[in-house]
Every structure is written in structure tokens, then in C-alpha cells.
Length: 571
Image 1 (cartoon, one colour):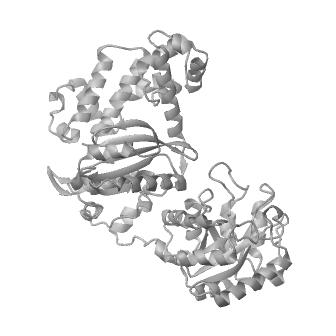
Image 2 (cartoon, helix red, strand yellow; image 1 turned 60 degrees about the vertical axis):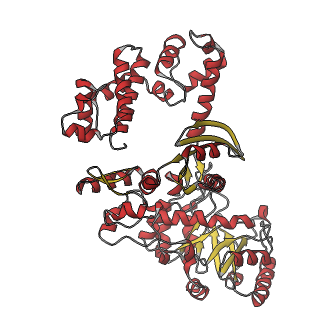
């Protein structure tokens, strides 16, 4: 069972490992390890056993361990755990996270080779001294090296786009197995965080072991890390290296609570457990229980319904007040994919895109859009073949001609104009007046008066939107030296719009700044900033961040029909 059993078992394992790192052996270490295994396999809830005074009667627990369990249940802490952890260097504790590396080996490396952290471990592997250590040898060292690789890969977070692309490919492959009945992403991936640590998939179906066997045979698998009856883990090759994918099979009548539990977040789940406790219920990955009777388990609707709650969109499950608002009937209805009527930042082959205007319109129609804003670069962006005033005037004419022929979609005349070093706008006003949408962006001078330059652009009567307002790239650029709070204040003062750039490596504004913008009453424009046809799919990731910020249909101008959008922009 989940409950507190696993939590306490993990603490006992960590105590045993820490004692081994210190060099202790014998009954103390064995006692903690044994108690941890007993708790893992226990079919009853330790809280219930503690309440009935029967903890010490469990074989393998005993009086001393029972007291520590009761201490944790009462205080949320185990004094002995905190004592032991303080006695072991932090760098050595971190080594425990490396697959295949235990406390005894770490103690030996520390004592004989002065290994204190991961860097030290890599050095003794490199110079060959680890292999010569008593009880080691070449094979063990190779296993430790593989463990280090896995550990370091696990520390890296993937962009949401990469993680979702991999997950959906694996899910499509899993659906080829006839016995599969349900399958879904879980964890932070399902909650659509901008970066993801793990790719977790949850499924149900006939014969879990056969589903796992099918899973590990995924064509791009380079290594099978685990293959059991209900759990599988593989390392697959991708364009960026290797990524781990984990699959868990659950019983059909536990799919709802398992999906709810493994989606998280941890904080959201803790709040839900508190509600269950108040009602005299128990909730775990297996179901909702009254005493021993399961009263919900087949769907998330059942699980949340027990508490009089709706099924929260996964993006909202972060314990940011969503449960309290739902209980009051005040949960906002966040924006849905079908609310989006168009893309408000697209580049064509007139600047540095690859699509012609006709191709942009064609792709927009396929997506069911009513409009797409063509926002090619202005002349200052010479690297991007930016439009001179003459070329922009020509493009405006071409878009007007094309719109007279198009049916079902309209191309908006726009530009992504550079905010220059003095805060001025890189385009003549007479041309700006002919455009439907003016997006002003910083593309150079990231450390030069950026806040003042953006505020100057916001004051310009013909600027509608500020593009990618912080300039960050998730993969490795912090962005401009900008006071985003001042920018938000100025946008509110001048009644301007801020962009949520949906390109997966930008997602700028992020969810926290979007929340600030919403609190100030600002409207948001979502644009993919795409230069290629496949980039239109980035809209889903921008939308996901908008949903994580609890933006509603009314907060996003892309949800307006074209006539109302144009009227708003003209204001």
C-alpha cells in the first residue's frame, strides 16, 4: 500500500545506507534493511496498526523500530535519521543515488581512496585505482560507470516538446498490443511543465507481463533497465542522445486512482489525502477506501467525485488553491485547445521563414484556424533578411491580394519590429498604420537598458504587443537584463498586450509571469514564432503554459473571432 508505508521504508533504507557509509556493519544495518522490506511488503496501513498498538507485533519490526515509526507518524520526522544524515558528508550521500552503488562500497572508496563526491569517483575510475580496490575488479567498475551515466542522464531535464514527442511515439507503439485497454502519460509530463525529468507512462490491459515484454521491444530501445510483471524501464535513442522511459501497469479497477496519484503533483495529492482523512476515508494509488471497502477506483471522475470535486485539468494540479476554489464552486474554466482561433506570430519566406504566404494560409486552414498573423522581421534584423520599408509595403499589397482570394482564413498584416538601442521602433509610422498587428521585440543589446527600451516601445501608439518579453531560452540563456514586473506594470498602464511565445525553448512569458500579468488585467497573445510548417504544433505547448497559469478564454486574444480581434487591435 502507499500510505506512509513506503515513505518510512525509504527512510529506513537511507539510514541503513548512511550507517554503511560510516563503516558500521552487523545487526544495526540489517535491522533497518529488514524493517524497510517488511514495510514495503505490508498489506496493512502502518497508521492503522499504530493506532491499534500492534506495530511491535509485526515480525521484523520490534519495539525499537515501532517507536521510530510512531515518532514519524506523530511528528513527520525520525530523530535518528536526522542524526545519521548529519554525520555523513553530503557528497557521499549523493553517491547513493547512483544505480548499483551501495553504502559498503562508498565507505570503502571513501576510506581507501579519499572519495568524497562524484568528481572524486570519476577520478579514481579514470586513473584505474578503483579497479585495484579490494573486492572491485573490471566488471564492477564498468557497472558503476554505467550507473553514473544513468544518474547524470536522470539529472538532465528535457524540454516538454522532446518529452511529449517521445511519449506519444511510445504510446502509439503500445497501442499496437491488442490486450491494452488504457494508456496515458503521467507525472510532470501530463501536467505539462516546461521541462520534464522523467517520461512516465501508465497503462492497463490483459496480461501486464506481456505488455511489458512488448514495451521493452520498442524499436529504439538501446538498453532494458527493468522488465517485470507490472513495471518496465528502457533507455531509448533520440536525436539528443538517450532518454529513459518508464511504464507501469495497474489493475483495471485501479486505473483512475493510479492515474490521479502518479500524475501528482505531490502537494496536490497531499491536500487530497487530507480531505480523505477528514471524511474518514483512505486514498492511495489503488483506490478510495472506507475501512476496507473500495468506493472508487475505475476513473479519475470517481476518485474526485467522492470529494465533490471536478476532475482538475492536470495543468492545475499544483496545490495553488485549486481544491479550495473547487469546493466553493469558484474554479476558473481555463482555456481549451478548441478556443484558439489563430496563430499571432508566424514568419514567412519574405524574411527568415521557409513558407510562402500561400503555404502559411494552407497550413492554417488545415489546423482549422480563422486567421494567422504574418510577422516577418524588420530591416534591422539583417541576419534574418529583415524587410526594408519598400519590401514591407510590397508584402502588405501581396497579403491584401491573397486575402481577396482566400476562403475560411485571413492572413493578418503584421511585423516583428526591432526595438532599437534608443527604444525607438525600426519601421516608418506610415507603414505601421497599414498593419493589423505590430509585435515589438528585443533582438540585440540584451544588457543595454532593456527595461527602459521595452517601456518606450509600449508607449508607442501603434505597437500592440511585446514579443518574447524576457528573451530567455530554456536550454541555456537567462534572457535580457529586464525588470519584467516594471514591464507588466507599463503594459497595464498603456493597455498593451504581452506575448506568450509558444516555441518550446522560449515559452516566454513563463507561467509565473503570466499569473502576474493576469492579476494586472493584461491580455495575452499566443504566437508560435514558427519559421517552418511543423512549428505550428508548438501552439499546444504555449497553450499548456497558459493553462498552468490558469488563463481563461477571456485572457487570450487568439480566442476572439477575426472581426473582434481586429477591432481590439485598432483600439
